[in-house]
Length: 553
Image (tube, rainbow, N blue to C red):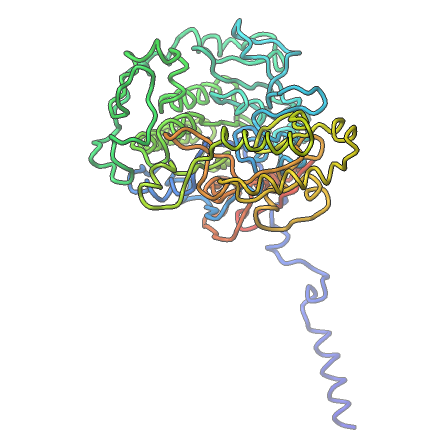
Protein backbone atom coordinates (compact mmCIF):
# COMPACT_ATOMS: atom_id res chain seq x y z
CA UNK A 1 0.00 0.00 0.00
CA UNK A 2 2.85 2.39 0.92
CA UNK A 3 4.55 1.53 -2.34
CA UNK A 4 1.45 2.55 -4.32
CA UNK A 5 1.21 5.90 -2.48
CA UNK A 6 4.90 6.56 -3.25
CA UNK A 7 4.38 5.92 -6.99
CA UNK A 8 1.35 8.22 -7.06
CA UNK A 9 3.23 10.99 -5.21
CA UNK A 10 6.27 10.71 -7.54
CA UNK A 11 4.07 10.88 -10.65
CA UNK A 12 2.27 14.04 -9.48
CA UNK A 13 5.59 15.65 -8.51
CA UNK A 14 7.13 14.85 -11.90
CA UNK A 15 4.17 16.28 -13.83
CA UNK A 16 4.12 19.43 -11.74
CA UNK A 17 7.77 20.25 -12.08
CA UNK A 18 8.61 19.07 -15.62
CA UNK A 19 9.38 21.92 -18.07
CA UNK A 20 6.26 22.87 -19.98
CA UNK A 21 7.89 22.17 -23.37
CA UNK A 22 8.19 18.47 -22.42
CA UNK A 23 4.57 18.18 -23.51
CA UNK A 24 4.97 20.41 -26.58
CA UNK A 25 3.46 23.42 -24.83
CA UNK A 26 6.42 25.74 -25.32
CA UNK A 27 9.26 25.93 -27.82
CA UNK A 28 12.85 26.63 -26.88
CA UNK A 29 14.46 29.99 -27.61
CA UNK A 30 16.49 28.36 -30.38
CA UNK A 31 13.35 26.98 -32.00
CA UNK A 32 11.59 30.35 -31.78
CA UNK A 33 14.53 32.19 -33.34
CA UNK A 34 15.13 29.66 -36.15
CA UNK A 35 14.75 31.59 -39.42
CA UNK A 36 11.77 30.80 -41.58
CA UNK A 37 13.90 31.42 -44.66
CA UNK A 38 17.16 32.95 -45.84
CA UNK A 39 16.85 36.16 -47.79
CA UNK A 40 20.04 36.73 -49.78
CA UNK A 41 20.09 39.78 -52.00
CA UNK A 42 21.26 37.64 -54.89
CA UNK A 43 21.45 33.97 -55.86
CA UNK A 44 24.17 33.10 -58.35
CA UNK A 45 23.78 29.79 -60.16
CA UNK A 46 26.92 28.62 -61.95
CA UNK A 47 27.06 25.70 -64.37
CA UNK A 48 30.44 24.62 -65.73
CA UNK A 49 29.87 22.77 -68.97
CA UNK A 50 31.42 19.24 -69.04
CA UNK A 51 33.01 19.45 -65.57
CA UNK A 52 33.94 16.15 -63.94
CA UNK A 53 34.01 16.08 -60.13
CA UNK A 54 37.67 15.07 -60.11
CA UNK A 55 38.69 18.35 -61.74
CA UNK A 56 38.32 19.79 -58.24
CA UNK A 57 40.64 17.26 -56.62
CA UNK A 58 43.02 16.75 -59.54
CA UNK A 59 43.92 20.41 -60.01
CA UNK A 60 43.47 21.39 -56.35
CA UNK A 61 47.10 22.24 -55.66
CA UNK A 62 47.18 24.56 -58.68
CA UNK A 63 44.06 26.56 -57.79
CA UNK A 64 44.16 29.92 -56.03
CA UNK A 65 42.45 30.59 -52.70
CA UNK A 66 39.40 32.54 -53.90
CA UNK A 67 37.92 30.48 -56.73
CA UNK A 68 37.07 26.81 -56.38
CA UNK A 69 38.88 26.67 -53.03
CA UNK A 70 36.68 29.40 -51.57
CA UNK A 71 33.57 27.40 -52.46
CA UNK A 72 34.98 24.18 -51.00
CA UNK A 73 36.66 25.58 -47.88
CA UNK A 74 33.97 28.08 -46.88
CA UNK A 75 30.94 26.36 -48.36
CA UNK A 76 29.44 22.89 -48.68
CA UNK A 77 30.78 20.18 -50.98
CA UNK A 78 28.51 17.35 -52.18
CA UNK A 79 31.21 14.88 -53.20
CA UNK A 80 28.92 12.13 -54.48
CA UNK A 81 26.61 14.14 -56.73
CA UNK A 82 25.19 12.54 -59.87
CA UNK A 83 22.93 12.97 -62.82
CA UNK A 84 20.12 10.48 -62.36
CA UNK A 85 19.06 10.27 -66.00
CA UNK A 86 20.43 9.89 -69.52
CA UNK A 87 21.21 11.23 -72.06
CA UNK A 88 23.69 13.43 -70.22
CA UNK A 89 23.98 16.48 -72.44
CA UNK A 90 23.86 20.27 -72.21
CA UNK A 91 20.17 21.03 -72.80
CA UNK A 92 18.75 18.43 -70.41
CA UNK A 93 21.52 19.19 -67.89
CA UNK A 94 20.83 22.90 -67.58
CA UNK A 95 17.10 22.26 -67.49
CA UNK A 96 17.33 19.62 -64.77
CA UNK A 97 19.46 21.81 -62.50
CA UNK A 98 16.94 24.64 -62.65
CA UNK A 99 13.66 22.67 -62.71
CA UNK A 100 14.51 20.17 -59.98
CA UNK A 101 13.36 17.29 -62.15
CA UNK A 102 14.43 15.08 -65.05
CA UNK A 103 13.56 14.84 -68.77
CA UNK A 104 10.76 12.42 -67.91
CA UNK A 105 8.97 15.43 -66.45
CA UNK A 106 10.46 18.61 -67.96
CA UNK A 107 10.54 17.29 -71.53
CA UNK A 108 14.00 18.43 -72.66
CA UNK A 109 15.19 14.96 -73.69
CA UNK A 110 18.29 16.06 -75.60
CA UNK A 111 19.95 19.01 -77.26
CA UNK A 112 18.05 17.92 -80.36
CA UNK A 113 15.47 15.20 -80.81
CA UNK A 114 12.96 13.75 -83.24
CA UNK A 115 9.51 15.22 -82.69
CA UNK A 116 6.98 12.41 -83.10
CA UNK A 117 4.12 14.84 -83.73
CA UNK A 118 5.65 16.97 -86.47
CA UNK A 119 8.01 14.19 -87.67
CA UNK A 120 10.90 16.64 -87.73
CA UNK A 121 14.09 17.17 -85.75
CA UNK A 122 13.78 19.94 -83.18
CA UNK A 123 16.28 21.91 -81.11
CA UNK A 124 15.77 22.26 -77.36
CA UNK A 125 15.75 26.08 -77.38
CA UNK A 126 14.81 26.77 -81.00
CA UNK A 127 11.69 28.82 -81.70
CA UNK A 128 11.05 30.26 -85.15
CA UNK A 129 8.14 32.36 -83.86
CA UNK A 130 10.59 34.82 -82.31
CA UNK A 131 13.23 37.02 -83.91
CA UNK A 132 16.89 37.60 -83.23
CA UNK A 133 17.81 40.70 -81.28
CA UNK A 134 21.33 42.05 -81.68
CA UNK A 135 22.12 40.12 -84.88
CA UNK A 136 20.75 39.73 -88.39
CA UNK A 137 21.33 35.96 -88.29
CA UNK A 138 18.89 33.34 -86.98
CA UNK A 139 21.03 32.75 -83.87
CA UNK A 140 18.55 34.60 -81.67
CA UNK A 141 15.42 32.68 -82.66
CA UNK A 142 15.14 30.99 -79.31
CA UNK A 143 12.79 30.56 -76.35
CA UNK A 144 12.15 28.11 -73.49
CA UNK A 145 8.82 26.97 -74.94
CA UNK A 146 9.78 23.27 -75.12
CA UNK A 147 10.39 23.19 -71.36
CA UNK A 148 7.15 21.90 -69.84
CA UNK A 149 7.58 23.04 -66.22
CA UNK A 150 8.79 26.05 -64.23
CA UNK A 151 12.32 26.72 -63.03
CA UNK A 152 13.66 27.96 -59.72
CA UNK A 153 14.16 31.31 -61.44
CA UNK A 154 10.48 31.35 -62.46
CA UNK A 155 9.37 30.55 -58.93
CA UNK A 156 11.51 33.32 -57.47
CA UNK A 157 10.00 35.79 -59.93
CA UNK A 158 6.48 34.64 -59.04
CA UNK A 159 7.23 34.74 -55.31
CA UNK A 160 8.44 38.34 -55.50
CA UNK A 161 5.54 39.47 -57.70
CA UNK A 162 8.02 39.82 -60.57
CA UNK A 163 10.07 42.37 -58.61
CA UNK A 164 13.07 40.06 -58.28
CA UNK A 165 15.20 40.10 -61.43
CA UNK A 166 16.55 37.11 -63.39
CA UNK A 167 19.43 37.51 -65.81
CA UNK A 168 20.91 34.44 -67.56
CA UNK A 169 24.23 34.41 -69.44
CA UNK A 170 26.17 31.80 -71.44
CA UNK A 171 28.16 31.46 -74.64
CA UNK A 172 25.64 28.80 -75.72
CA UNK A 173 22.03 29.86 -76.28
CA UNK A 174 20.65 26.81 -74.46
CA UNK A 175 22.94 27.55 -71.51
CA UNK A 176 21.13 30.87 -71.02
CA UNK A 177 17.58 30.26 -72.29
CA UNK A 178 16.79 27.18 -70.19
CA UNK A 179 18.18 28.38 -66.81
CA UNK A 180 16.49 31.75 -67.31
CA UNK A 181 13.14 29.99 -67.34
CA UNK A 182 9.93 31.33 -68.82
CA UNK A 183 10.03 34.67 -67.01
CA UNK A 184 13.65 35.89 -67.25
CA UNK A 185 14.17 39.63 -67.59
CA UNK A 186 17.00 38.83 -69.95
CA UNK A 187 18.92 35.88 -71.39
CA UNK A 188 22.05 36.54 -73.42
CA UNK A 189 24.41 34.38 -75.47
CA UNK A 190 27.40 35.01 -77.71
CA UNK A 191 27.24 34.82 -81.50
CA UNK A 192 29.76 36.04 -84.08
CA UNK A 193 31.31 38.76 -81.98
CA UNK A 194 28.26 40.05 -80.08
CA UNK A 195 26.13 39.24 -77.08
CA UNK A 196 22.62 38.73 -78.43
CA UNK A 197 19.15 37.69 -77.29
CA UNK A 198 15.66 36.86 -78.58
CA UNK A 199 12.51 38.92 -79.05
CA UNK A 200 10.98 36.49 -76.54
CA UNK A 201 12.63 38.67 -73.90
CA UNK A 202 12.84 42.12 -75.49
CA UNK A 203 12.61 43.99 -78.78
CA UNK A 204 15.92 45.81 -78.41
CA UNK A 205 19.17 45.17 -76.56
CA UNK A 206 19.56 47.25 -73.39
CA UNK A 207 21.91 50.19 -73.78
CA UNK A 208 24.50 48.59 -71.52
CA UNK A 209 24.66 45.49 -73.77
CA UNK A 210 24.92 47.65 -76.91
CA UNK A 211 27.72 49.60 -75.24
CA UNK A 212 29.49 46.39 -74.19
CA UNK A 213 29.30 45.03 -77.74
CA UNK A 214 30.42 48.33 -79.27
CA UNK A 215 33.49 48.49 -77.05
CA UNK A 216 34.59 45.08 -78.37
CA UNK A 217 36.45 44.36 -75.15
CA UNK A 218 36.61 40.71 -76.19
CA UNK A 219 39.03 41.70 -78.97
CA UNK A 220 41.68 41.62 -76.26
CA UNK A 221 41.29 37.85 -76.18
CA UNK A 222 42.38 37.47 -79.78
CA UNK A 223 45.86 36.47 -78.68
CA UNK A 224 48.00 33.33 -78.56
CA UNK A 225 46.83 30.73 -76.07
CA UNK A 226 49.84 30.02 -73.91
CA UNK A 227 49.77 28.11 -70.65
CA UNK A 228 48.98 30.22 -67.61
CA UNK A 229 51.94 28.72 -65.77
CA UNK A 230 55.07 26.82 -66.81
CA UNK A 231 53.80 23.78 -68.68
CA UNK A 232 56.33 21.65 -66.78
CA UNK A 233 54.24 22.25 -63.66
CA UNK A 234 51.15 20.70 -65.28
CA UNK A 235 51.93 17.27 -63.90
CA UNK A 236 48.24 16.56 -63.31
CA UNK A 237 47.61 16.00 -67.03
CA UNK A 238 49.14 13.97 -69.85
CA UNK A 239 51.95 14.89 -72.22
CA UNK A 240 51.25 17.82 -74.52
CA UNK A 241 52.22 16.12 -77.78
CA UNK A 242 50.02 13.05 -78.21
CA UNK A 243 47.67 11.33 -80.64
CA UNK A 244 44.51 11.72 -78.55
CA UNK A 245 43.77 15.40 -79.19
CA UNK A 246 42.01 17.17 -82.01
CA UNK A 247 43.39 20.08 -84.01
CA UNK A 248 42.20 23.52 -84.88
CA UNK A 249 41.98 24.02 -88.63
CA UNK A 250 45.42 25.07 -89.85
CA UNK A 251 47.33 23.34 -87.02
CA UNK A 252 49.75 20.50 -87.61
CA UNK A 253 50.05 19.46 -83.97
CA UNK A 254 47.97 20.06 -80.84
CA UNK A 255 50.73 21.52 -78.70
CA UNK A 256 51.06 24.83 -76.90
CA UNK A 257 51.03 27.63 -77.79
CA UNK A 258 47.93 27.77 -79.98
CA UNK A 259 48.29 30.77 -82.28
CA UNK A 260 44.74 32.13 -82.23
CA UNK A 261 45.46 35.23 -84.40
CA UNK A 262 46.99 33.04 -87.10
CA UNK A 263 44.16 30.48 -86.91
CA UNK A 264 41.43 33.11 -86.58
CA UNK A 265 39.90 33.18 -90.07
CA UNK A 266 39.94 29.41 -90.61
CA UNK A 267 38.20 28.70 -87.29
CA UNK A 268 35.21 31.01 -87.39
CA UNK A 269 36.86 34.20 -86.10
CA UNK A 270 35.01 35.18 -82.91
CA UNK A 271 33.44 31.74 -82.73
CA UNK A 272 36.94 30.37 -82.08
CA UNK A 273 36.97 32.14 -78.71
CA UNK A 274 34.31 29.72 -77.51
CA UNK A 275 36.75 26.83 -77.94
CA UNK A 276 39.53 28.34 -75.82
CA UNK A 277 39.53 29.40 -72.15
CA UNK A 278 39.15 33.06 -73.09
CA UNK A 279 35.49 32.32 -73.83
CA UNK A 280 35.00 31.77 -70.11
CA UNK A 281 36.79 35.05 -69.39
CA UNK A 282 34.43 36.85 -71.79
CA UNK A 283 31.50 35.26 -69.97
CA UNK A 284 32.81 36.46 -66.61
CA UNK A 285 33.35 39.96 -68.05
CA UNK A 286 29.77 40.08 -69.29
CA UNK A 287 28.35 38.70 -66.05
CA UNK A 288 30.18 41.37 -64.05
CA UNK A 289 28.86 44.04 -66.43
CA UNK A 290 25.32 42.69 -65.97
CA UNK A 291 25.75 42.72 -62.19
CA UNK A 292 26.48 46.45 -62.33
CA UNK A 293 24.12 47.53 -65.09
CA UNK A 294 21.09 45.56 -63.90
CA UNK A 295 21.83 46.48 -60.25
CA UNK A 296 21.48 42.85 -59.22
CA UNK A 297 21.46 42.34 -55.46
CA UNK A 298 21.11 46.05 -54.78
CA UNK A 299 18.01 45.80 -52.57
CA UNK A 300 16.30 43.33 -50.24
CA UNK A 301 14.29 41.63 -52.99
CA UNK A 302 16.26 38.56 -54.08
CA UNK A 303 17.55 38.58 -57.65
CA UNK A 304 19.02 35.68 -59.63
CA UNK A 305 22.09 35.60 -61.87
CA UNK A 306 22.46 32.38 -63.88
CA UNK A 307 25.88 31.95 -65.48
CA UNK A 308 27.08 29.04 -67.60
CA UNK A 309 30.74 28.67 -68.52
CA UNK A 310 30.67 26.87 -71.85
CA UNK A 311 34.29 26.90 -73.08
CA UNK A 312 35.18 23.98 -70.83
CA UNK A 313 32.91 21.81 -72.99
CA UNK A 314 34.42 22.92 -76.29
CA UNK A 315 37.96 22.38 -74.97
CA UNK A 316 37.08 18.96 -73.52
CA UNK A 317 35.51 17.80 -76.77
CA UNK A 318 38.53 18.84 -78.82
CA UNK A 319 41.42 17.90 -76.55
CA UNK A 320 40.12 15.32 -74.06
CA UNK A 321 39.85 15.28 -70.28
CA UNK A 322 43.52 14.36 -69.73
CA UNK A 323 44.96 17.18 -71.84
CA UNK A 324 47.16 20.11 -70.85
CA UNK A 325 44.52 22.27 -72.53
CA UNK A 326 41.82 21.14 -70.14
CA UNK A 327 44.06 21.74 -67.14
CA UNK A 328 44.96 25.23 -68.32
CA UNK A 329 41.30 25.99 -69.00
CA UNK A 330 40.34 25.11 -65.43
CA UNK A 331 43.21 27.08 -63.90
CA UNK A 332 42.08 30.11 -65.90
CA UNK A 333 38.42 29.48 -64.98
CA UNK A 334 39.49 29.46 -61.33
CA UNK A 335 40.81 32.99 -61.83
CA UNK A 336 37.61 34.04 -63.58
CA UNK A 337 35.57 32.73 -60.64
CA UNK A 338 37.81 34.65 -58.27
CA UNK A 339 37.16 37.85 -60.24
CA UNK A 340 33.43 37.23 -60.17
CA UNK A 341 33.33 36.47 -56.44
CA UNK A 342 35.34 39.57 -55.58
CA UNK A 343 32.92 41.71 -57.59
CA UNK A 344 30.04 40.08 -55.76
CA UNK A 345 31.75 40.84 -52.45
CA UNK A 346 32.17 44.46 -53.46
CA UNK A 347 28.82 45.15 -55.10
CA UNK A 348 26.46 42.87 -53.18
CA UNK A 349 28.41 42.15 -49.98
CA UNK A 350 30.04 39.00 -48.71
CA UNK A 351 27.41 37.08 -46.76
CA UNK A 352 24.58 38.75 -48.69
CA UNK A 353 24.57 36.39 -51.65
CA UNK A 354 24.30 32.63 -52.19
CA UNK A 355 26.13 30.63 -54.84
CA UNK A 356 25.78 27.11 -56.17
CA UNK A 357 28.14 25.59 -58.72
CA UNK A 358 27.59 22.37 -60.62
CA UNK A 359 27.93 20.96 -64.16
CA UNK A 360 25.50 19.92 -66.88
CA UNK A 361 27.31 16.57 -67.36
CA UNK A 362 30.78 15.13 -66.99
CA UNK A 363 32.87 13.32 -69.66
CA UNK A 364 34.72 10.13 -70.53
CA UNK A 365 38.47 9.89 -70.94
CA UNK A 366 39.56 9.39 -74.55
CA UNK A 367 39.02 5.67 -75.27
CA UNK A 368 42.01 5.46 -77.63
CA UNK A 369 44.19 6.65 -74.74
CA UNK A 370 42.56 4.18 -72.34
CA UNK A 371 43.14 1.33 -74.80
CA UNK A 372 46.83 2.22 -74.91
CA UNK A 373 46.87 1.93 -71.12
CA UNK A 374 45.38 -1.60 -71.45
CA UNK A 375 42.01 -0.48 -70.12
CA UNK A 376 39.03 -2.01 -71.98
CA UNK A 377 37.55 0.80 -74.06
CA UNK A 378 36.33 1.10 -77.63
CA UNK A 379 34.44 2.94 -80.36
CA UNK A 380 31.21 1.66 -81.84
CA UNK A 381 31.08 1.01 -85.59
CA UNK A 382 27.67 2.42 -86.53
CA UNK A 383 28.10 1.79 -90.25
CA UNK A 384 28.65 -1.95 -89.80
CA UNK A 385 25.89 -2.15 -87.24
CA UNK A 386 23.45 -0.25 -89.48
CA UNK A 387 24.06 -2.61 -92.39
CA UNK A 388 23.32 -5.67 -90.26
CA UNK A 389 20.33 -4.00 -88.66
CA UNK A 390 18.80 -3.07 -92.02
CA UNK A 391 19.14 -6.70 -93.15
CA UNK A 392 17.29 -7.76 -90.02
CA UNK A 393 14.49 -5.27 -90.69
CA UNK A 394 14.14 -6.29 -94.35
CA UNK A 395 14.07 -10.00 -93.51
CA UNK A 396 11.55 -9.70 -90.67
CA UNK A 397 9.32 -6.83 -91.79
CA UNK A 398 9.98 -6.41 -95.50
CA UNK A 399 11.07 -2.77 -95.10
CA UNK A 400 13.52 -0.57 -93.23
CA UNK A 401 10.87 2.16 -93.05
CA UNK A 402 9.59 0.61 -89.87
CA UNK A 403 12.31 2.72 -88.21
CA UNK A 404 11.60 6.45 -88.59
CA UNK A 405 14.53 7.93 -86.69
CA UNK A 406 17.55 7.18 -84.52
CA UNK A 407 18.73 9.87 -82.10
CA UNK A 408 19.95 10.16 -78.52
CA UNK A 409 20.56 6.38 -78.55
CA UNK A 410 16.85 5.74 -79.19
CA UNK A 411 15.03 4.17 -82.13
CA UNK A 412 11.70 5.71 -83.09
CA UNK A 413 9.38 3.25 -84.86
CA UNK A 414 6.58 3.87 -87.34
CA UNK A 415 3.50 2.66 -85.49
CA UNK A 416 1.32 2.97 -88.60
CA UNK A 417 3.47 0.50 -90.53
CA UNK A 418 3.48 -1.85 -87.54
CA UNK A 419 -0.31 -1.68 -87.42
CA UNK A 420 -0.62 -2.29 -91.17
CA UNK A 421 1.54 -5.40 -90.76
CA UNK A 422 -0.90 -6.63 -88.08
CA UNK A 423 1.91 -6.68 -85.55
CA UNK A 424 2.06 -5.67 -81.91
CA UNK A 425 4.16 -2.61 -81.12
CA UNK A 426 5.36 -4.29 -77.93
CA UNK A 427 6.46 -7.41 -79.83
CA UNK A 428 8.29 -5.37 -82.47
CA UNK A 429 10.04 -3.33 -79.77
CA UNK A 430 11.17 -6.53 -78.05
CA UNK A 431 12.33 -8.18 -81.25
CA UNK A 432 14.40 -5.14 -82.25
CA UNK A 433 15.82 -4.80 -78.72
CA UNK A 434 16.91 -8.45 -78.75
CA UNK A 435 18.52 -8.08 -82.17
CA UNK A 436 20.46 -4.96 -81.19
CA UNK A 437 21.73 -6.67 -78.06
CA UNK A 438 23.69 -9.10 -80.24
CA UNK A 439 25.84 -6.32 -81.75
CA UNK A 440 29.32 -5.47 -80.58
CA UNK A 441 29.45 -2.38 -78.39
CA UNK A 442 25.83 -2.65 -77.18
CA UNK A 443 25.71 -3.46 -73.48
CA UNK A 444 21.95 -3.55 -72.94
CA UNK A 445 18.67 -2.51 -74.48
CA UNK A 446 15.28 -1.50 -73.12
CA UNK A 447 11.90 -0.96 -74.71
CA UNK A 448 9.39 1.83 -74.27
CA UNK A 449 7.00 -0.82 -72.95
CA UNK A 450 9.45 -1.58 -70.14
CA UNK A 451 9.75 2.12 -69.36
CA UNK A 452 5.97 2.38 -69.15
CA UNK A 453 5.30 -0.78 -67.14
CA UNK A 454 8.08 -0.77 -64.53
CA UNK A 455 9.16 1.49 -61.71
CA UNK A 456 12.93 1.21 -61.56
CA UNK A 457 14.60 2.44 -58.39
CA UNK A 458 18.33 2.05 -59.02
CA UNK A 459 20.99 1.27 -61.59
CA UNK A 460 21.03 1.89 -65.33
CA UNK A 461 17.29 1.27 -65.89
CA UNK A 462 16.48 3.87 -63.21
CA UNK A 463 18.66 6.41 -64.99
CA UNK A 464 17.10 5.61 -68.37
CA UNK A 465 13.58 5.83 -67.01
CA UNK A 466 14.24 9.28 -65.54
CA UNK A 467 15.33 10.35 -69.01
CA UNK A 468 12.37 8.75 -70.73
CA UNK A 469 9.51 11.10 -71.59
CA UNK A 470 6.39 9.24 -72.68
CA UNK A 471 5.32 11.86 -75.24
CA UNK A 472 8.76 12.58 -76.68
CA UNK A 473 11.07 9.59 -76.30
CA UNK A 474 11.58 6.61 -78.62
CA UNK A 475 10.61 2.94 -78.74
CA UNK A 476 13.94 1.17 -78.15
CA UNK A 477 16.73 2.49 -75.95
CA UNK A 478 20.39 1.52 -76.30
CA UNK A 479 23.18 1.57 -73.73
CA UNK A 480 26.69 1.27 -75.10
CA UNK A 481 29.24 -0.92 -73.35
CA UNK A 482 31.22 0.80 -70.58
CA UNK A 483 33.99 3.06 -71.94
CA UNK A 484 32.59 2.69 -75.47
CA UNK A 485 31.55 5.81 -77.35
CA UNK A 486 30.32 7.07 -80.69
CA UNK A 487 32.88 9.77 -81.43
CA UNK A 488 36.12 10.46 -83.34
CA UNK A 489 39.35 8.93 -82.05
CA UNK A 490 40.41 12.27 -80.53
CA UNK A 491 38.80 14.28 -77.75
CA UNK A 492 36.21 13.44 -75.11
CA UNK A 493 32.44 13.24 -75.19
CA UNK A 494 29.45 12.44 -72.95
CA UNK A 495 25.81 11.38 -73.06
CA UNK A 496 25.78 7.94 -71.44
CA UNK A 497 24.22 6.77 -68.14
CA UNK A 498 27.67 5.60 -66.99
CA UNK A 499 29.23 7.07 -63.88
CA UNK A 500 31.98 8.91 -65.75
CA UNK A 501 29.24 11.00 -67.40
CA UNK A 502 27.03 11.42 -64.32
CA UNK A 503 29.47 12.33 -61.50
CA UNK A 504 29.68 16.13 -61.34
CA UNK A 505 30.53 18.69 -58.65
CA UNK A 506 27.89 20.36 -56.52
CA UNK A 507 29.11 23.20 -54.31
CA UNK A 508 27.07 25.64 -52.24
CA UNK A 509 28.41 28.82 -50.65
CA UNK A 510 27.24 31.98 -48.92
CA UNK A 511 24.09 33.09 -47.14
CA UNK A 512 22.19 30.25 -45.50
CA UNK A 513 24.78 27.60 -46.36
CA UNK A 514 26.56 25.41 -43.83
CA UNK A 515 30.28 24.78 -44.02
CA UNK A 516 31.12 21.12 -44.60
CA UNK A 517 30.78 18.23 -47.00
CA UNK A 518 29.01 14.92 -47.53
CA UNK A 519 29.74 11.69 -49.34
CA UNK A 520 26.10 10.64 -49.26
CA UNK A 521 24.60 10.42 -52.74
CA UNK A 522 22.87 13.55 -53.99
CA UNK A 523 21.20 13.89 -57.36
CA UNK A 524 21.02 16.78 -59.78
CA UNK A 525 17.29 17.32 -59.34
CA UNK A 526 17.96 18.10 -55.66
CA UNK A 527 19.58 21.44 -56.51
CA UNK A 528 16.44 23.48 -57.20
CA UNK A 529 14.49 22.13 -54.19
CA UNK A 530 17.47 22.96 -51.97
CA UNK A 531 17.52 26.55 -53.23
CA UNK A 532 13.71 26.72 -52.89
CA UNK A 533 13.90 25.58 -49.27
CA UNK A 534 16.68 28.09 -48.60
CA UNK A 535 14.61 30.96 -50.00
CA UNK A 536 11.30 29.76 -48.59
CA UNK A 537 9.60 29.77 -51.98
CA UNK A 538 7.57 27.24 -53.95
CA UNK A 539 9.38 24.36 -55.58
CA UNK A 540 9.39 24.36 -59.41
CA UNK A 541 6.14 22.92 -60.74
CA UNK A 542 7.58 19.55 -61.78
CA UNK A 543 10.17 19.11 -59.03
CA UNK A 544 10.93 15.51 -58.13
CA UNK A 545 14.13 16.09 -56.16
CA UNK A 546 14.35 16.82 -52.44
CA UNK A 547 16.28 19.45 -50.46
CA UNK A 548 19.75 18.40 -49.34
CA UNK A 549 19.28 18.94 -45.61
CA UNK A 550 22.99 18.87 -44.76
CA UNK A 551 23.59 21.97 -46.87
CA UNK A 552 21.18 24.36 -45.16
CA UNK A 553 21.80 26.21 -41.91
